[in-house]
Structure formats: C-alpha cells, structure tokens
Amino acid sequence: MPRPHGFSYESHADGTVRIAHHGRPATTLHGPRAAQFLAEIAARTDDQLVMARWTGNYRRGNERTAREHPRNRR
Image 1 (spheres, rainbow, N blue to C red):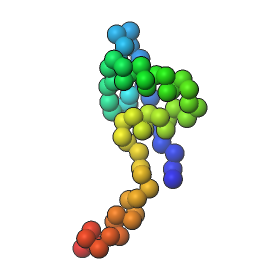
Image 2 (tube, rainbow, N blue to C red):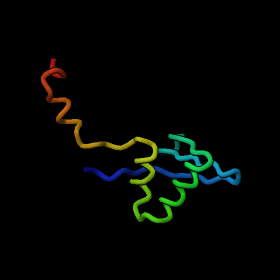
Image 3 (cartoon, one colour):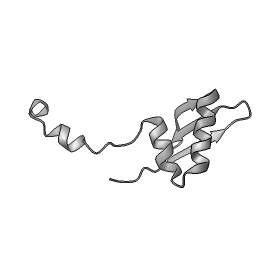
C-alpha cells in the first residue's frame, strides 16, 4: 500500500488545527479533537499517515476487490 503524502497542518492560538492536503483545506479540528490530534502527532513518527487517517483521505486496500465484484461490473 502506498504511503500517503502531501499533508500539512497548522495549529492556531485559539486551539484550532487545520489539516491541508496538497495545499487545499481537508479538515478543521476544534477543542478536544484538536488536542487529541496534536497529542497523536507528537507520539507517532509517521505524521503523514496520522493526518491521512484523521481526514479520512487514505486508501483502505479494497478498491480493486470492490471494482471486481459482480455487481460493480458493467
């Protein structure tokens, strides 16, 4: 599975965290969710994977299987 790339985040003074993907806004986190995200970023070494998971922008590995399912063939 390819590693995600192109994610960045900005932490603001009001506690808001904005995550962008290739410069475009992907999600904004507020309050306890922003604090949880920052704690996870500090604890993990693969920031790109963490940001991909928090935005929901990552591949799950089942795309080929779903495409080949009989109901999806045309």
